[in-house]
Length: 151
Image (cartoon, rainbow, N blue to C red):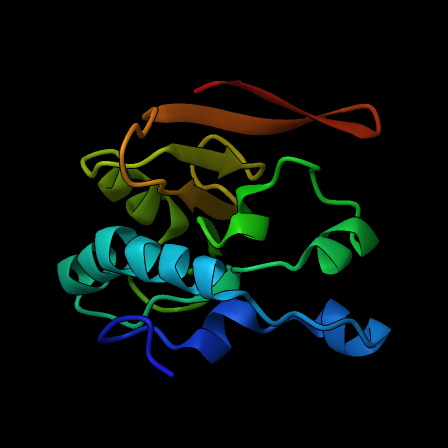
């Protein structure tokens, strides 16, 4: 099933953790609707801009999967409203380039996930439709915990 011209449902629900742990990662119809909106408003503009495949490293997460991987209890991944993009090794498109492009879109939240000052390890982006916050944060390690600070 296609969520948009260049993004399939399989790409958004793929999870090695779910496979390994035997956890269902099937979305509801509401989650599917959210993923389609995310795909059209975030994924497709990125895909068109770079004219290159875009790699989703984490998309939708069922509540059971999110709990098993110790994800945030308020994760937008569980609503089908968020994706992580990782372009490492893809060629000429870097995670930084994706991050900077997203800043020009309407989005709810974009996170520079770890990495260094030149390139994040991956980019988290969410979209909720009406009422997007345009929140820009950077994830850093503080001891054993992750902190999110203004970018």
